[in-house]
Length: 475
View 1 (cartoon, one colour):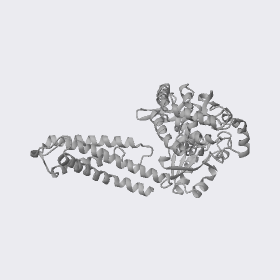
View 2 (view 1 turned 180 degrees about the vertical axis):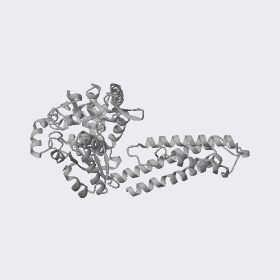
View 3 (view 1 turned 120 degrees about the horizontal axis):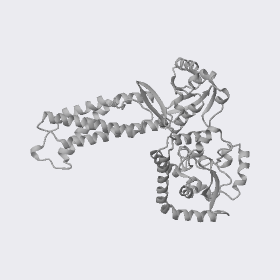
């Protein structure tokens, strides 16, 4: 897959060149034969041959300037919108060049409208090709093809920051095989599905036994000599090594880069990841969307209310104590999906099953009612959470709201997931829900808090719908 990806990148200039020529040919057909927008007078009708030089100049311009925009390099994390914007910018510049040449050369045959149509087609075709390539690559990666096997060396804050980024962005094509740490005890404890492979003295074994493609070193700079030894060992095993400097323990949105006579200076803005302005924007979005959704869910909610009441004794609406932003407790509203004695049996089931008390989820939970199974599968039991959103206790998107008993078992770093309002949906929910172990859920939640944007919230909302429809990880 990596060989395929490398081959595709090398062929991209040729593909771009061919698509540009094809766009000009199609633009000619639309302008002179189909005659869209305005008809062409017979006196101004022309063959395609005079446009060949302009098509070639246009194509060569793009192929020569796209490398400057990084369009022929693999840049993990670069979005399709970034690539499409670069295509638009390059096509615009090429159009200006061609128009300027026509002004200087004053050819007998030249349609500016055709050039503009060709530009639109170039943008559509080149952007579509990159979207198809990304979709194909993502599909292959989802089947484990072309995924680089990663070893994290260092499980401190910087190491967990790297883990958060990889777990939250499977589209990047990395899969964490496990991690090592300079503290052998910490390096031997699994973080959910992320395996602890031991101390640094296990590096050679980890590289040899796990077919590692990439080692990401997140040790502090005080371990400079040890880092050099690790890099040398990776090189010996033909494994790529990348080093994360200490500064990357910080969220880079809070780092300001300046220069002093060519010397880079890093400063901290002091502004939290979710600043006051961003919080207001997030709150406004929440309230507007809830008000828009209220008329749609009102009648179905009444039907659900009746079904819950008729299925088993007890109230239809259930209040459950949860922990919200900064550890503040609140009553979360849900449609009751369990029998009324469910809370009393909670501790008993944890003991019987040996489940994680920080994140108890059980398939075929005996406390769930018949209607409750359907409610939980389709996430209908969470509709009353919209009341908590209006009250300002929750957001539409955010970390899952834990119970006070769960929070008692948190480690200090895991409490970072309480730094924002909990959400009805979230990055954890659209990444597998109950199938995702607790430690990975924390990594996802902290990543969300550190990288929040309205675009990320919208993306999670759009991903929520198919997850609800198919009930993935819901039980």
